[in-house]
Amino acid sequence: MSEGAAEYEIERKFLLSALPRMPEPAEVLEIDQGYLPGVRLVERLRRQRDRGGHTRYYRTVKVGIGVRRMELEEETDARTFEHLWLLTEGRRLHKRRYVIPDAGRYWEVDEFLDRDLVLAEMEIPSADTEIAVPEWLRPTLVRDVTSERNYTNRSLAR
Image 1 (cartoon, helix red, strand yellow):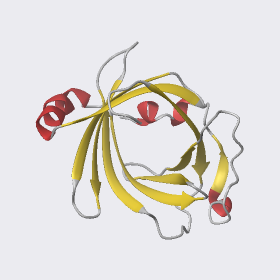
Image 2 (tube, one colour):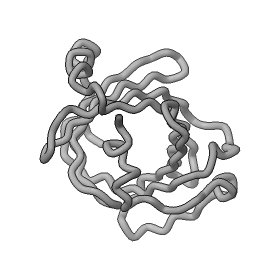
Image 3 (cartoon, one colour):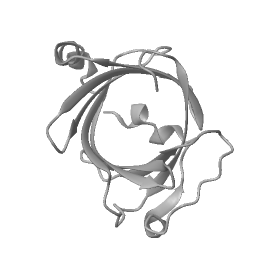
């Protein structure tokens, strides 16, 4: 996604029964997310740290629910993040993300560290793109929760 440009995010999300036995991930990130107060406009703050200790900060606005949503995201600095983070009290989540390459795309497996929950998602080029669930993911796959509001990160933030 180009920084600052509004684009559509098209993805499918799946509920898992446990953390799957994955192939070696391309990347592992520790992610803290919080949501600023708002009804019509919901802004997300994200801090993500990679295995090397490098930290990046983002501000994101998403509109819609389901497979295709509009997304506007930009990278920010630690000072802005820390200032706005105070406003997210009571609307936060903490997770570890495993990024697994798969046929030119990536599975993102989110292990929530603040609750017993594991989700997997994949960004796709169009809403009607078929997803072949890889063998390593099948034993833990429960169901597709893409259109279930209870599984949006915003709904999960507490």
